[in-house]
Image (cartoon, rainbow, N blue to C red; front, side, top):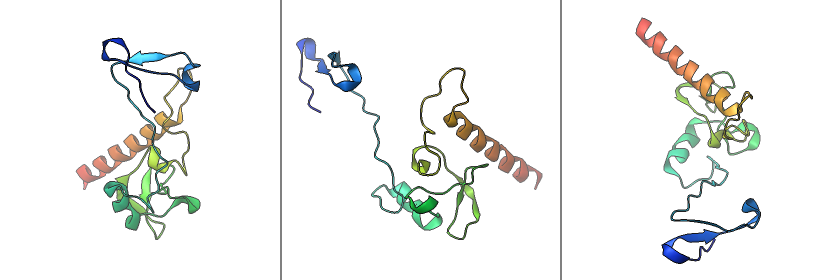
Amino acid sequence: MALPEIDGGASQCNGSITDSIPVSGDVLVDAWMHTPNALRTDDPLLASLSPRMRAFAGTGSPETDPATRLLVNPAGELDPRILLIGIPTGGQHPDTTISPMPGTDPLFLQETDKAAQSILKIIGEQEQG
């Protein structure tokens, strides 16, 4: 997207998301991400998961345990060291990164709750053991 400069050095853009009303500002933040594919990626962190993960239902999304969000390895077992939430798991858990709305039970907060519970359980087991 080209951002023409307007008075004072700010940039201006418009489009369908702004109902074609021009919007201006000093900074543009673009939070759009490509759908990640851990099986074919240039991202070193995501690529490092590839040999340790099973892809969910033929997608490039790492499969996770729905209750704990622990990574599922190629043998179908849970990896006790890797919890994964958010955009990379979109093939299995779609809409988990949509901002929470008041009065709902948003998937994103359900995801973070499950991961937090798993972490606390792991810490508790380590302290007892």
